[in-house]
Amino acid sequence: MMEKDYWQENIRVNRAQYAYMLLPAKNKYAVFSRGTGKSFIVGAEVDENVRIMPRGVTTIAQATIGQALTKTLPSTFKMLDMLGYKPYDYQTHTGDYVVCRRPPDGWYRPYEHIMQFDHVISFSNGHILYILTQEGNSRGPNADFNITDEALTINKEKFDQEVAPTNRGNETVFGRRSAHPIVKHHGNAFLSSMPYTAQQKWLLEPAEYYERERGIPLFQRWNRMVSVQMQLIDAYINKDRALFRDLWNEASRMRRELTPFVSRDSTLFILGSVFDNIENLGMSYIVNQYKVMDKLSFMVEILNYVLDKVDHCYYKLEDRHLYYNAYNDSYVRDFAENAGYDWESLRSVHDSRIDLDCDPTLPLEISVDWGSAASFLSVGQERCYDFVGRQMTEQPVDNVINEFFVRRDDENDTEVNVLADKFIAYYSHHACKRLTLYRDRYGDARRANSKKTYNELFVERLQKFGWEVEQLVHPGIEPPQHEKFLLWTYILAETDPRFPKVRFNATRCRHTLISMQNTRVIEDSHGRFAKDKSSERRQSVLPEEATHFGDCVDKRIWTKYHTRLKVLSTSFVDGRV
Image 1 (cartoon, rainbow, N blue to C red):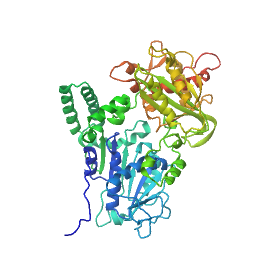
Image 2: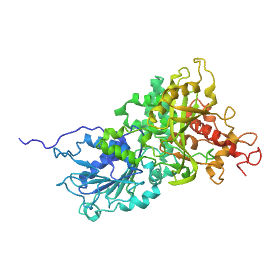
Image 3: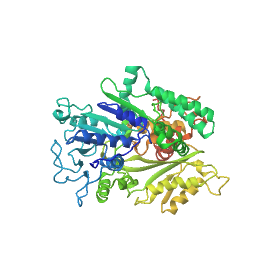
């Protein structure tokens, strides 16, 4: 009796993953929320390419090598490990792949001649993954397929100019001129969470074929389904079984109407949320995330809510104010080499040492917004460097480099420590333990259940862990809305040298930007500008969905720069002039 030379592994896939794998297409776009299983798909794409295109080349296009090594590849190879792939052991001469080094003698080599292996993961059958980065080696060898994870962080124009032209290899081996053409050859797989800025919207454009070919306004119907799912979660928490059942059936019906399909030009666009993976995660996971996350984060990151840019935005943010690629690649690469490219170790790298926009020798600036249901912390640092233009500057640039958030109970001051501890842990390796705290005046109010204010408790916590804290405060209870709007208008216009440049780390400060870009400006009865804060007063909308992260940044910017707004006299220049 012959022994089997294979084994059987049962791997459960959810319906979003199944649809992605079942529908063959040349170009695929998967915009999935957290908990939907993007890492599975990247691993499945790599596995398929290795199997069907031996000696081929798959490019992994990322913003930076740090992102590839700490985000995409650890999750990818966790999936490949489930499928039986093992790293090569030079002692036992067993294994299936080697990372960033020359492969063993006797292994097949790719059809495309490769001289350097610093950015290459080689498989025993000759297929390779070639890591392309927009902050390093953006031009690789001729390739057969491209995978871009965390696609919202890449510069699409740069991708089209540098990465896309390399996707042209082996036409006679795998392509249309071969004996057995592969549908996906010279295609792309773009995987991402939901875009939240204007320059990321290219990820959603391919979905237009839903309405063009079948009359389905995909995003409108998807958001209506998300609204039903939010009500469904509330019904579950309130133990209203009848309402839960009705809402569940309605959400299921709406989801069936959005069944994905491939377009006539071989494009597949799929939206997926945690509800697509509920059989694996369970309702308890969804409810737990609902309870511990702010509402807007939950809607976007867990239910994949599609954000639209508001008209008449309070903050006139543009591409020139946002940067995405601030990984300290040198540190990450050294860490990876020292760890022997151990994927589990790389997954755990998460502190300020991987942030290129954080100079450990300089002090930090933080501002806090104490809310009734949640508290917010924004981190900034001045540098004589523009991370958008990638150039030194004569004048300091004010960089918003990180954010932290915590829900809290009004009767429990320990939540103040929780927010402080998140900051302390992330910046535990920051050499200069000095910071400036731009105080929230509401945090100076005495609380019935404590002899100390939130600001006092917060500062004490920071000092306990070795931080030297300088405290500054803006005049008045809150920065005046009209004058603050004018200040932001001048700062973001970048036409007056009296005002600083402000830059935002769009990867670390995701929810700050969502807050700011979803804040409308209104005029009051006296014709003065103000934020539209009506959403904060609606019980159905938590503060996180309104303006608080923006308010948090405002406190620091207003306190530092409001005096520069005065021109010649104590009057203010109207922003409409």
